[in-house]
Image (cartoon, rainbow, N blue to C red; front, side, top):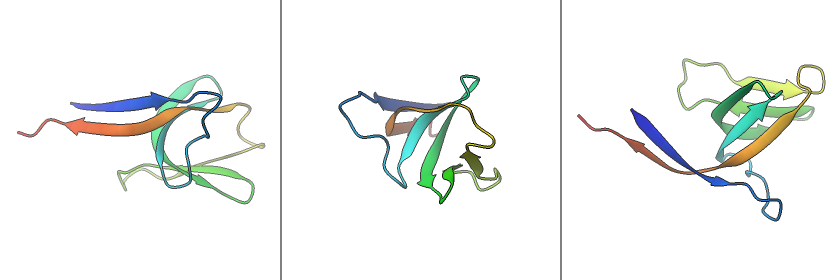
Length: 79
């Protein structure tokens, strides 16, 4: 298994910067850990695993988009 440690986003801190990995809540229904990018009309979340397509969100397909924190450490079990 993998573990990821997050630094919770506080109101006084800036959100995750472009290209950084963060934890995001989409429409209060799902949470994901992805690399963050801005687009002309919204945001794009990109998985580190290339077999998963990028997720694009804008006002047409997303009611609520929240940054929950910045990924600061990832640990994996080495076998």
